[in-house]
Length: 327
Length: 280
Ligand SMILES: Nc1nc2c(ncn2[C@@H]2O[C@H](COP(=O)(O)OP(=O)(O)O)[C@@H](O)[C@H]2O)c(=O)[nH]1
Ligand SMILES: Nc1nc2c(ncn2[C@@H]2O[C@H](COP(=O)(O)OP(=O)(O)O)[C@@H](O)[C@H]2O)c(=O)[nH]1
Ligand SMILES: [Mg+2]
Image (cartoon, rainbow over all chains, first blue to last red; front, side, top):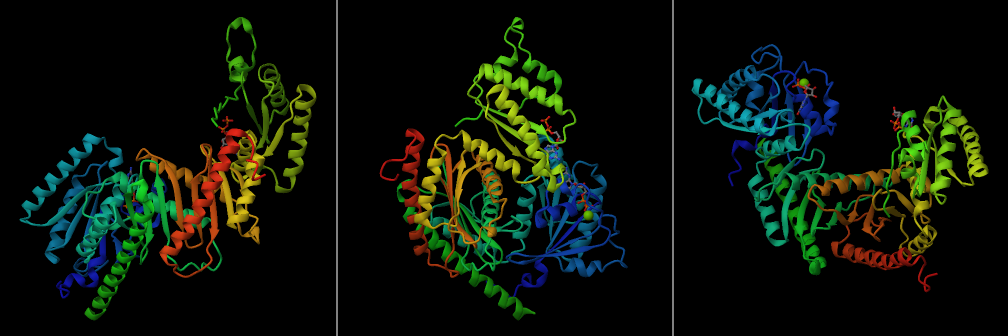
């Protein structure tokens, strides 16, 4: 692997959140990173100046929200060139329940500017608040927006911009799914992680494994099999069940050094498995064990998961050292 | 156990409909809802403005029940207690409940139970737990055996839940030195957590059969015990060290083995109504 690649500098973990006012930027931050209930975002105050929030997960994340009413190129307020040159992903939020033509114009201008400073930047477009649209209308809207953005970029003579679209809402898991994918693109070690998870699957009878950020329920990596949203939901909720149960009988001093482990058998033969990892992460997997060989397969799983955890620790140590060496 | 719960409209027009016993009108609602009734839970608003009228309604309900379901169990909730000053609650409850109790006993021959409740604290949950408990036959046998089980496991707490409502029907925490360390709202919280979990796995059209958690604070075992009851065992964590996984699994197997034995006994209580002789 080529560790001298500049994707290892600090910038890889900054997510810039943009969009017109009231498109839902602050709400998304609150719901995903602060466990706020979606309905409680109804009366959020409008954001008036750029805000930055830091989160620690496998990587250190910074989410910067620019107020929608801000003129992007008003130089007195912030150094836009410096900001744009340091970000890893640009997330643009569009309110799909509103007239979105002006948002698209705004988006095109921003993309043009961003690409001029950082040609390889990932542009992530959230077609947001889809909870208000019918199933059919969602896809029509997505098609329409993709078409128009494509046309706009052509008009500007921009080709080969890396741009992805997501249908999202804070009222279901779609926003977590979108953020999971966005964050994953910023994790330099992702291919190696996915490899490890595939190996783990192969050797320990898992049907699906996620590496979750416990706080936000974003998954920072998963094996290469497709993600089924229901499986994701059940796994994410299993984390809450585990944490809530463990919180009930708190002991003062919190001596526990051992990693949290939670296993639950379901009546349809599926087993849910959770094991605490490093840096606020947990491995959550879905497995189908045959009744007869329960005990042995469970030991195999435990054994392999412990190995996975050690690899993760090593991987993280290594990237941390390299990062420090780079500065 | 199956619970058919009727939430009866309290507005006058519904009450008239329930309570009027005019046979000429054919089968009115009244005889229907009071027939084969096993439990009555009558809710009184502690701040109710029309006390006399509430009592009249209560009397008419009792009259119907004496006629159609003489074996009914009757519970009274004196509700919205949070609206009353803390130091006046007991006094007010006694006053109201004693009045209702003597009406029920002297005039209709019913022996009733009463609870002071509010949706704003754990009192409502506790009242429902005791109500569900009193409907389970042989509950005292379960309790007896539960403390025997704890003699073996030395658990921080062992809890039995009713399976559909997740209400706690019995618990023991003899081993705990200082019960102040236990969260007084924990039963309600556990019920909610487990209910949420049940709904979660419902999305993939199944239910859970067990859960074993080794957490920071304790180890928790949740298992189906009988067709009506779940058991939850909370064990303290002795070592703060990272215990070898094999060792942990051995421990697990011991507890699971104990639960298995308990299951057989509890099932026998459920079907035969008594503890097998070797245990009593
Ligand atoms: N229906 C719906 N409303 C949303 C969603 N996300 C945010 N909102 C609402 O949109 C409004 C504006 O949100 P806010 O986060 O303040 O927008 P910002 O100006 O972009 O930061 C709030 O009333 C939110 O409750 C969503 O997914 N669906
Ligand atoms: N202060 C207080 N209000 C309550 C309590 N329980 C219910 N209420 C309120 O009483 C009102 C009527 O409740 P509802 O359940 O609709 O009564 P129902 O007509 O008997 O079904 C609602 O506004 C509830 O919020 C309580 O324990 N304390
Ligand atoms: Mg805002």
